[in-house]
Length: 204
Image (cartoon, rainbow, N blue to C red; front, side, top):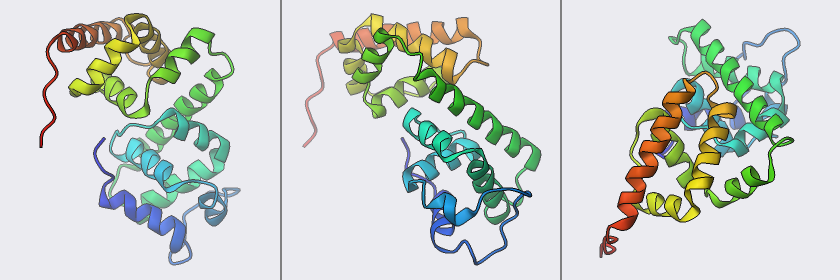
């Protein structure tokens, strides 16, 4: 995954260090900014910011942490970012995207309580980096590295199909399921072909 933008590194800095330096635009009954930032990691703050403003990838772990943090904190972070760093952003669209991210994260958090044993076992096989590459390839058409392709094939077609279906139902329910599963099948066939070819020697 590409490194966080300077913009979102700055929002974390603002949230952690200078929250009193500007008036935070919050709704009545919203959470206290300092209390919220003390309970959220920089890594997840960057992921959430990038997912809302740059359509970046948001991991399951950070989704769970966001839900644990609570909706008032999520709304406070979003309102702060809008005024401090994205004053020209379309507010209605940004708030809608923030609501979408929150809804998806709640679904991921709730799914943990109902995951079947096969899903749990397959999720444990997928390291976050390769899992992210695979998901972004299916839904955004990005490239998967040969190394992750070989790992995917080693985990097996059954796990690939189980996780593809789970990710659609939990993380991307608004996407056409037939198209998503077709992209998943195309990726599997590509990775299977890559796994059959000799591995490139490591560069010096």
